Image (cartoon, one colour):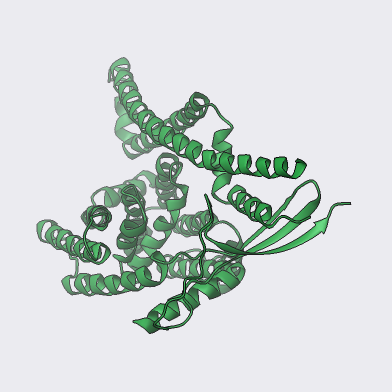
Length: 327
Length: 131
C-alpha cells in the first residue's frame, strides 16, 4: 500500500511538472482511439477511413478544447453515415442537434461522457463511464451517459443493418428513413441500457454521498450490481439477447478499472503548475507557481511541509517569480 | 522593493482570473435579471429549433399519410394541438433554464466575493506602502 501511495505522489509530481505535455498527449491518444474505433465500426467513407486523416484529426484535437474532439467524432460518424445513405445521416444529425440544443447548452463539460460512453461500450467495459460519472459527476450526468448510449446504439444498429439498407431502393428515401427511425425507436436493448446506465449514475452518486466508511467502494459495487440486475431483468422481459456472461465479466472488469481510476485520478488533486503574468506600478511579473509536494518517501515520521495561508483560492504554492522592472 | 506577500496574493488572483474566475467574471458583468433573461431567451430559441426538428422528422416519417390527409383534417385543430404542445414544451424547458441559471448566478457571485476580498487586501498593501 505504501508503495502505491508513493507511486501516486510520484505521478502527482510528474503531472505537476509536465502537465503542458501530458494533457495534449492524453487528448491525442483518446481522440486517436475514438476515431479508429468509429472507423472500425462504421468506416463507409473511404476518404476518412485512412490512418493519415485519423492522425491529422487526432493531432488537431490534442491542442484544441475537449469539446472539439466531440464535434470531430460526431463529424466522423455523420460522414460515414452519409456515405452509406443520406437518410441515416439525416436521422443522426437530427439526434445530435437535439442533444446539443437541449442538453449540452447547460453542461458543456459533460460532453466527455458522451464521447467515452460509446468508446467503453465498444471496448466491452460499458460500466466504466456511468460508475465514474456517478463518482465525480452530478445526477444530471445520467443524461450525458444516456446520450452516449443513444449514439452507441445508433452506430450499432446501423452497422448491423447495412445489408438491409443497401438492398433497399435508393429512390425510396422515405422507406429507408422509416426503417432507421423505427429501428431506433423500437430498440429495446438501447432502452434497457439507457435505464440501467442512468440508474447506475444515480445509485453511485447517492451512495457515495452517504456518511459511511468506504462509501465510494460501496457505491461502485452497488451501482454495478444495480446495472447488471436491470440489464438482465430487461433481457428476460424483452428478450434482447444480452449476453449474461459478457455483462457480468464486463461489470467486474469495469469495477476494477474504476477502482484503479479512483485511486490514481479521482482522489488526487493534480494541482497544476500555474504560469501567470501580471503587473503592478513598478514591475511586470512572470510567475511560475509550483505545487508543493506533501508526502515524499515512505518514512514513518510524517513531516508536515505545508503552512497555513489566509483565505487562499489555490493550494499552497512555492512561488517562482521572474520580475522585470518597468521602464 | 519586491513584496513577497503581495506577489503571492497577486499570483493567486491571476490564477483565479485565468481559471475558474473567467466564467464567474463574465456572469458578474450582468445584473441577475439580465443574465437569467438572456439565458432563458437563448433556451426558448434552442427549444423552438429542437421542436421544429422533431416535427419535421415526424412529417417526413409519415410523409404519405400527411400529404393525403392534409386536405381532410381540421388544420386549425391540428395547429392548435401543435401549438399547445410547443408552449408546454418550451415553458417547461424555460422553467428548468431559469432554475439552473439562477443557481449558477448566485454561485458565481459567491465566488467573486472571495476575489473582491483579495482585491481589498491588495489595496491595503498599497495603502501601507504609501504610508
